Structures are given as C-alpha cells and as structure tokens.
Amino acid sequence: MTKTEFCRSFPWSDTVIQWFDDTGYHKLDEDRRVSIKLTTGGYADHYDRFAVNIISKTNGRIDGKIFKFEDYLDPTKRADHRPDYKTDNHFKVIAFCGWEWYIAVPADTTPVVKAIQDYINVFR
Figure (cartoon, rainbow, N blue to C red):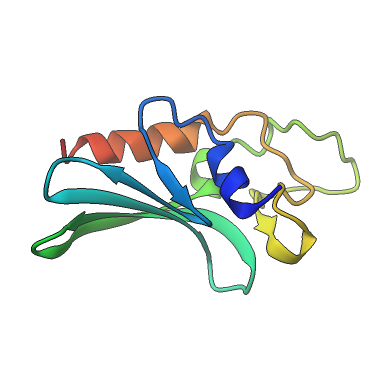
C-alpha cells in the first residue's frame, strides 16, 4: 500500500478529496479549499493524526485543527487480535514499516472521518 492508498482507505463518504501522497484537497467554493494532511506528532515517520486547514486562495490560512487518531478511535475496538501489543491509543502508521496500521488496527475509522467532516462543514 502507498501513503495515498492509506489516506484513501478512510471512509470519506461525504467529502470528495483529491489525494497527492499524504495530502488531500477538497474544494469548498471558488476561493476556499480544505487541506487534509497525514502528519506526525514529532516522531519521525510515525504518522498518528490528520492536520486539517481551511485555506483561502486570496487571503491564506483561515483556520486549522489537528485530529489525533487517539482522540477519536476507540482502543478497545480493534480489528487485530494481537495479545502481545497492549495499546493505550497508539493507532499509527510507521512509514518504514509500510503504509498500513502498525500493529494496532482500528476496527472503525469512521469517528475520525466524521469529526473532520463536521469541522469542514462549519465552513460551508
């Protein structure tokens, strides 16, 4: 899987996003765009969040918010069955291990997508 495929694997049902590597763009209107970027929390190549920015083509950044996976995905609901890994909300992807969830696999990523889509809808 590539990083683009990983980002597309989330259930973006209400939002049309054009992905380029780890960054997706959504058009709000003629002037405003949404940028959604898979990012790290400061630990190189450990991706554990989306950074979402509302951008005006004429005036620059309007607003932004970080959506950490741990804030929206339930660590007790996992698709993996790894007894050797006890998670305390460590849902992440490590680039050099491949663009798939690293050990802890969330059963459902809808909550983080819904939060992002609700945030985007504030600016519609």
